[in-house]
Length: 449
Ligand code: GDP
Ligand code: IMO
Ligand code: MG
Image (cartoon, rainbow, N blue to C red; front, top):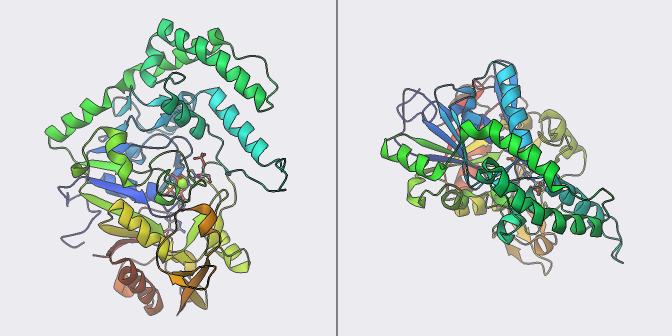
């Protein structure tokens, strides 16, 4: 381990760090957060909700985390679900219980913001019903207009946050009368909206919902706090903070492939509003990327390989959704997209994940430009689904490597063609690759500084 080793617990960086996805999600953020937790004190989720599925593998034990920060496996670290997250209390309680059943301590090491918004059952129904209507080909163009959401109620919950008068925050669960008052309004409005979307169900009942969600509030009460003051106190106490991005930059509501995005700012730009910490505290940003590209759900994907190449990547990379188990769409690495995301996120380093999946290809391709419909080339990303859907990926083709690399421990010991592939990525993006991942286990990690 060198002096600059970014993952050694003996080598505290003296920095606050963000881990963010640079593609369309599932880049391996959970693994990286787990690794970096060793040298930070507080691990914070700032966006998204249970649409995220972050996998951590330790000694053959696999943990899939949806709402709880991936630092939870270290009992002496503080984990915080900050105000920018939308929390489904039922999923959270199940996650806490499942971790405890496996011997993971979840107690006064977990805090939840009283200002995080609550995902309610009618949000999930609305999400699913809207997707059903959008995919019903009922709009005269025979098209499927759905987003391919996780149906976890994320969009409707964030929409309520913006609507204000129909929203519930975690702190509201702690006062039954107050909660009942909000729910009376919501139930009337939502029942009508769900009916308009074709949901055949009895009217929403404020008494029942209030009883259930007040009970969740009582159950979560020991964890609920003003996370903004808590995090500022952590800063004042000199504790190092690790921000765990959920979803990914190309799914960012402002900077992603709109409208095929999620409903939060999941780039590093979401950290200040999602936590209440000024942006200058985000010192290091580790942009996490796969050595290729994957995407779940609908939306443009210029380097998609809907052919045996994509199938080989899916099968070697076990590319099935951690949250929904949907097969992920797979394709070559899109450097135009990664460089754009690194720019938006202010990435200071890259973690290149799942490099082992590319072993055995005769040649590997890197997308360096897009060809526009008029034939011109651009090396700029296009964060607009309808325009990005019309480009053609232009590639650099590099020779592949046959050797399996899942036991590699040193960048210099990787096959020459794998090293050249990594060198090309670094040169194009203009940011160093600090971590190379060659398998899901903590130990299958090559520190490359
Ligand atoms: P996240 O959402 O960004 O945390 O990523 P996911 O957990 O949804 O998906 C990443 C998947 O790849 C998980 O199943 C990980 O266990 C696995 N994984 C992470 N790094 C590597 C790697 O270097 N090689 C392989 N083969 N699998 C990896
Ligand atoms: P992690 O944190 C991959 C995608 C969904 C869908 C779109 C909108 O595990 O990387 P939503 O339910 O958020 O309204 O869905 O965003 N999506 C993800 N894809 N990984 C994720 O999270 C995702 N979170 C949302 O598939 O296309
Ligand atoms: Mg995931």
